[in-house]
Image (tube, rainbow, N blue to C red; front, side, top):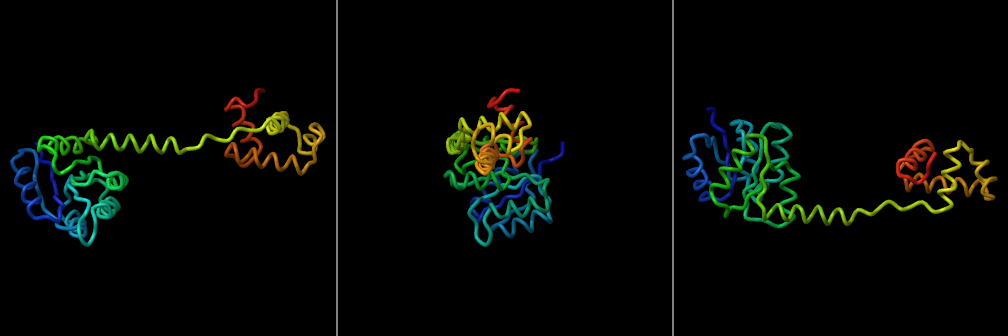
Length: 214
């Protein structure tokens, strides 16, 4: 069975040496190199072509997030596992946005690291429960922040019903006893609320959303 090639990027020599010694005991994992900063990691990834990079996030010269971005731009086949002491939201999301397929804290049991390497090599993702909880909390927060689309007013519904019947602006104005300029204002507001830019799209969206029926 072909070994999984791993590059370790961390600015602490003791951490690199410890990880290297631990991983080398696994028959299916080959440590192909080490890097002490993000810039060196980018260079060594280009030369050594590892399957997986174990990436610390805070390193001198270039941090792990920027290193992942640069590597992904030139070596998209490389997969990343973030291995860090930081579990706050900022670092979690920056790491995931940069392409991390797994996110582990450095105090994780070694079995978790082995599991993550094998899972990521298979094309899977792995995030520890404590970190996953923060991810879910952030998604819940974002969903709450998304405002529901503003509803059409009664007058706007009347306008779009007439639009659906093929009425021109002048005909709508006569039918509703309002000026043609007011009709144009209502139509622009309808476009904005429905997220469209033309009449056919507005009618289609209104039907899809159940605002009007043909």
